[in-house]
Image 1: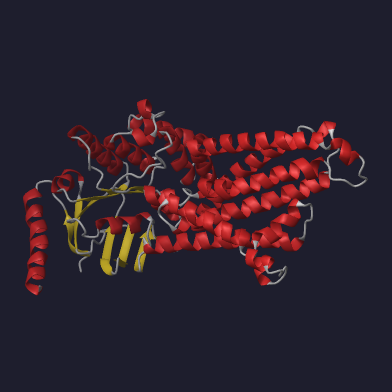
Image 2 (image 1 turned 120 degrees about the vertical axis):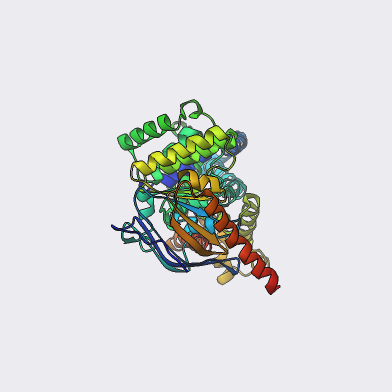
Length: 251
Length: 254
């Protein structure tokens, strides 16, 4: 079997559903509007910043905040994109068709995950195109931009895996979206209480997604943060695969 | 328990002592069946007899709790990928992706079944011509009538020219003309050497196209044997005997 048969099928389904297009149009319009506002602010303060020897540049004041907005939007967009991946198949009665075609559960999960990830990467590229369009007329800090982009890629990849996992555990896409949103928000802010109490280390901070995403958005890449995101994605996809295998056993 | 044993040659499908529980009760119990190429087996039973569960296990969509399924002499449970090339399955309500067109369904099913490139194009052309799907190709599956949807499901099941065709209540919601066409197609497939299992609760359906019959009741195989097309009355008598006998027992037990 073509190893990407499920990816191709899911990708096609994403492209013909209005939801993906509406999400793309609305979020990109919002990001473009914010880009112009950030750019306006950057240009207004250009003279004052010129006096500072190591003042913040275009990437700090425009590109990174723009990616930060994309991350906030992703909290909502990713659950909406992933909610139907498996829950929709279960609801349609098409999941047994995939089993009957001899497609292993791991390949079903991975295929759907890759399709959603492809869409999200395209979304990120279109967002990045806005600051990159000005690359010829401003001094870009390429290292910082690459680190921030890597952080967003990892975050999107782990959110997509989480969304697919939530979709694999329920039969109703809306419930899958709600689950994914709640888990994402909990993961992001699980250390909020600890931080308010002045505790900035420990397991609770390690568990929080924000602990690992924010340094990357500031241009600081560490292997510990990369591993955290990879672990979250692998764990989510493994849970989804186990759930599908259980579905096949249960019938 | 009785079983259908092939008279000669290796059966394309052999079920041995299959058991499966669903929702805490036995849905299929100690079922053994054999089927050879070119045979059409009618699986009869009242609603809830275990027909769909049996067919889901044969199609590879569900695993039995115990027992073995052999496909062309190979252990199907150990090698579920055998289903990909050798089995075509039409579930009771042909499942579709409503947002995809008929053409996209054929492509997707073809790829899932391992077809690509020229082989996929050839298979598509053959099945489109045979099931007269040309006018429907660009139509979304979600807007198809029940009969058209059933035709699409059948096309997807036949696309990869399987050695075993599993049809679960295929005549549901079809008009008489479509039923006649379906019967013709089943006979044609059998003549070409495809083994067919047809699940139904309609006796006329079985006597019209099947050469063997198996009656399931409360998850167990209660009758099996060759079928003569003139056997309709005898088959009907036997079917009602099995259903009524068990109901009477159940009433007495209560």
